[in-house]
Image: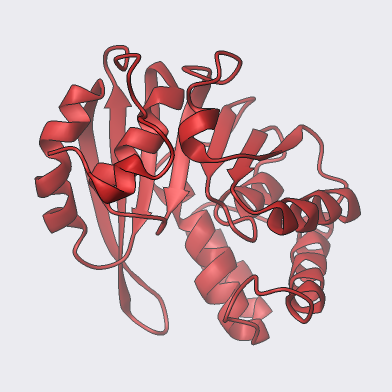
Length: 238
């Protein structure tokens, strides 16, 4: 996906980028590639692939969910900043919190945010399990997102405790999302969530499957969740 295709395909979805935003995406690409030489941030470094598989793919959540306004959003395990930083560029009023377990990725994100002059962006080096047990963050976010981090049963335990009642947990998945969701439904209910929507589409050009799962927080998550670091992954809720 070249830059012209990126612009036009977003316009078709009602997202228009100004010159500053386009410059920020180009800076993002350049900083990503530069830092990737020093640390392993992504296997995708070709410009057209980054614009398609990282930038456009991250923004695709906004084709189905309204991100306009001062929404308090948490991105769990964002890695090199996906999906929250591309969304922040498109919707500057977003308040973004990113938690990641690797300090070097947090350093990259802090540098990136500074270079792009992004306001209201906060970065925390922590395990998702301990972050979600912190009273400062628990049940504080309108939207919590995760992109291809773990299975739905695991992701739900890490993310739903951070969502305000009435807020949403949004999981961005490739193939097999419906199957993952079916297995995770009991856990989602146990954690205070209720599945509202599954949006399925093909990523343009390469035609690969994408799914956006929206889960509403309908009641408080029991205090014992998430469990100790590593436990959700080793022993997923059933």
